[in-house]
Image 1: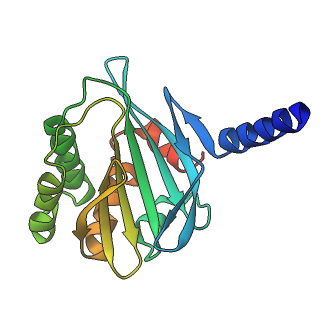
Image 2: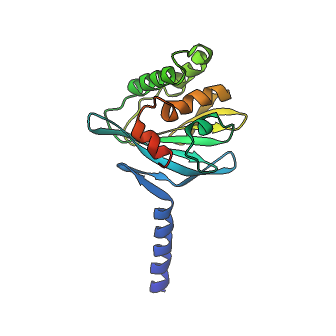
Image 3: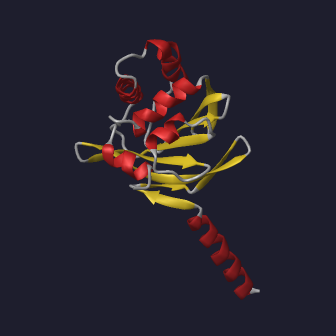
Length: 186
């Protein structure tokens, strides 16, 4: 019986370790389930500032891809999951960085998206602390569902919004070139 218990513990431990991938100072799930679909991590990386790691992020797709424009434009279920690893990041800094990212992603023409971009501030009204997880999941033909610590906050409609949102990390001027490469698995 003792050997059986040890064997079960070893198998369970292997499956738990196998299900997560270390990214920076944290671990992210290898696969997630959204809207009845299994999404697998395409790649991941970290965003740093002044030698401090701010967060780790993973890009989850149905099928792996290294093409950032295809990923951003595709009308398929996919997700970006961010886990905050520093006390430096605050809600205000995160919102400001996303708004700046939207400006870069749209060549400073956020007018068609302005009302939907403002929903991000509304949805993420709670203060961010180290260890929190933010997720932006696009569901085919539905919109971008915003999650905070696995709790659904709301939906932002439109594939055009998703295109700009994903370009924040995968566009020509991403928030971090090394994070973009990591998310693309390059």
